Length: 96
Image (cartoon, rainbow, N blue to C red; front, side, top):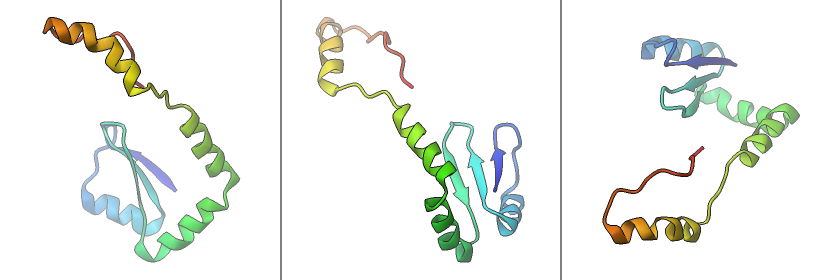
């Protein structure tokens, strides 16, 4: 599996399709989103292989734990004073 960071290595679509014809490709978009591109006939085999991969399962588990979640009620309480003033909301909390 090859990873292509499109922000650092912009490729034409035909080049990406050629790579995906050889092996699955992970595309990292400039906005941080990830997509996997693989041949249609190989998709089921690749999905099954990833399901059985302890390394990939650990990666997924670690990724799901990294997300910070904030209850909506907490956010509403924080911004309520600013909303009642009618001014802009200041970003005091970092968003992952």
